[in-house]
Length: 320
Image 1 (tube, rainbow, N blue to C red):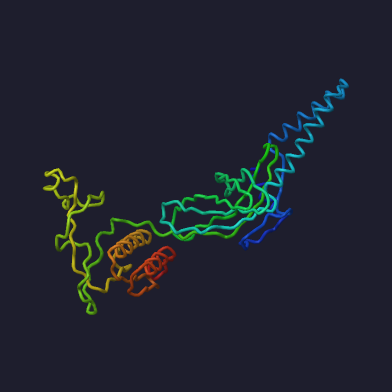
Image 2 (image 1 turned 120 degrees about the vertical axis):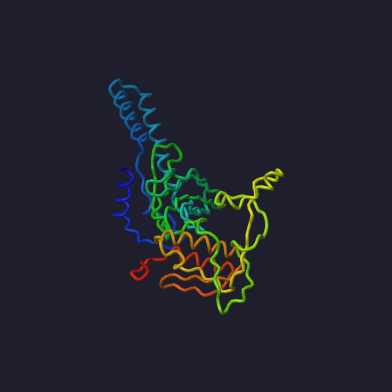
């Protein structure tokens, strides 16, 4: 409730436009400060001490009240100063697969004084703390669950501190429009890569299939029981699986039409697995989606282009 109230106050006072251009420096008009619950309790105790000192004419009581009040005022200044002129910039975020955790980063920098216990959090998220050395930088990692494919936005961040006494809460907001690309989750149930004949293919590429025995490898939970090497297990060589290979056309197309009975997300997950498998085997492949045709190629750039197309694919009426 208090967090939403502070966000509305910041929207009304600052009216910052997102996304903001990095780096952002927290100048005076961007920092807000209010007492914490401990701060209100501290003020209440000071009022009681002052009333008791007035009522009983206790000179040392006045001294204690003014001393504690001056300490509280100094603490408020240091709380505000812990954020003032702090420089903020987003870090690089790597793409992830659906179901994984995206690691967003924020760099905190300062060139004057060290900063202590600076916290960063998303709306309704857990806070991550960091100390910023003098004339140095600190990096805060913000893990965000990637639940579905597409773009995952970090959203607005709150930077706050309670340093040094915990009596005041100073905070500011920043929104760089940072986002992370989330690929579909690979589905090993896609099976071996499609073996297709092509008039342009030379038929020299070897891919996992069912034709010829190739080698023994470690057992995987997705392996078929009929591929388990029982003789090797009897010789106490461990649980191994037989790997079979097939001769494939050099024109390997990973197409939407290979899974006609599945839904959109299931198709994308299986095609993602095929893309990763083809890249692992060093093959040249192309990707065909409704409205998307990525020509035959290979390598890291081609793999990333295919994964991006799968992540951002939007089903159309013709494909449905």
